Image (cartoon, rainbow, N blue to C red; front, side):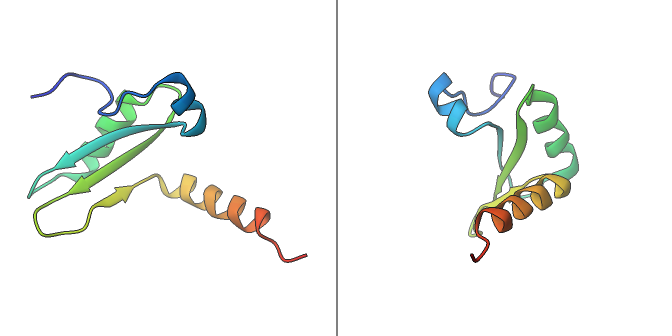
Amino acid sequence: MGAGGEDLIMARAARESFPYSIECKNQEALNVWKSYEQAEANSGDYEPILFIKRNNQKPLVVIDAEYFVKLHDKFLTENEVK
């Protein structure tokens, strides 16, 4: 058992560049929904991100689908061909 709250504590300057709240799980069996709820509960004013990993597998990142669509739209807007 670790301490409560976010898994990654950042300095103010880092938080300004990376405004996310990180929850990490390294487990063979995982309830993704419950883990994401924990990330949300600990996120405060920042967007929660859940990093998941298990043995012999690549790490994955879980974010809210609506937030992903906003990120994608922003990417498309910033990278329009002129």
